[in-house]
Length: 217
Image (cartoon, rainbow, N blue to C red):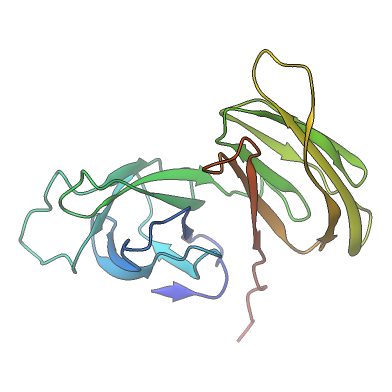
């Protein structure tokens, strides 16, 4: 069941298929131990919000809907989710070796207690150290690390961004971008830094997450 916003007491997730190959599936079925639902695997934005079962669960991605009474193949891509993780991103990556569904999945905590509106959550998947200025905030993130950056501006509007990188063991900085991004205090932004094939300059990819407030009946 898809939701436009997280409801109190519900477990929700949004999905992203980062750097998916052209022949990758665009939809799969997400099984949470009690039921399955078809989910989108978007490349360029976060999916709609999906509701999942509460408690300790094991998620599986399947090529078709789960059938009652038929065991789930243990080779299907999966991940465990603890009961206290009630809002998260499901990050999908390509895995051609999996014959059930050619993907693997991981979970990123998206709870407001660790990642609030107006903030940015960076994941550095590259082999470069990246740093610079994001409006009023500084960024310095090592390879294979994550970092939460506070709101880069005090109000809605454009702010300057100046990012650079250097490889481990180097001190010389190389530019990534000098531009402007837009701050919206009602949104959170999920950002990934990844190696770009054919160049030493890493790529920065950002995805906005804005949840509409629950409408009262």
